[in-house]
Length: 302
Image (tube, rainbow, N blue to C red):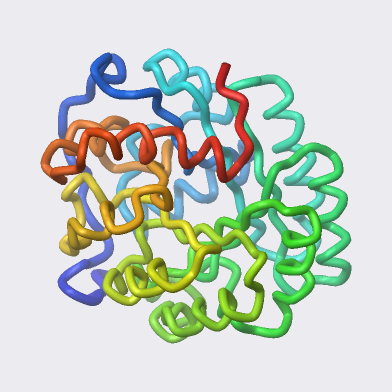
């Protein structure tokens, strides 16, 4: 079933048969992909089935070690690896998998996950960070929560306590009847604003430039020094919605490059190929492509 979305975005979407490059353009600054997904095999396969049915065809069905090797071979210097638990009781095993995967790959920084509201959620984050993971990933659509719900308090407080970033898919898009919540209801930018105000020491990164509430997130970016955005899937002119160009330049130290690899319907470097069309200032490119992620996640890039 095709689902209408705001501003013309519709799911499911087709694959894009675009050509891919063999390597990062050598003229570009150092590239850090701040939004790469790594899951254990059975979870990855379940996610791909969901996307194939409800989202878009997955072009790169690669398992975790293959994901890292693929991007490394193409010149991506470092990867920030994300995952999310879709029900209570699975986060600890997922965090163990992420920690072990990152330990095998010095160019991977792994983030933890937790299911909002599950028993001991703060302690789950504590253990994950103390074991070497470098932040937390949450997904409002998949985990069925709104950012300003009370059950998130333990997670927010743990992130503040350890001074680690929280990457939270809090934007409204993509909307689909396949989710168990109305994403436009739970993900209003005003609900993210309440979190930013209530936890001024929380380092919050919202992926996809806050799609589709771009102007609202631009205003939040102006007002809050604890907010970052990442570009994931928004620079490649694939969706029927386009962020305003000024969103990349208004606070260039707060925008991170990310891709959602391997869960893509198009070439791994599509967004890199389209960077020129966004008219970014040359001195902002190193910030977007690597430096901002280095600072936010405390990366050692050699």
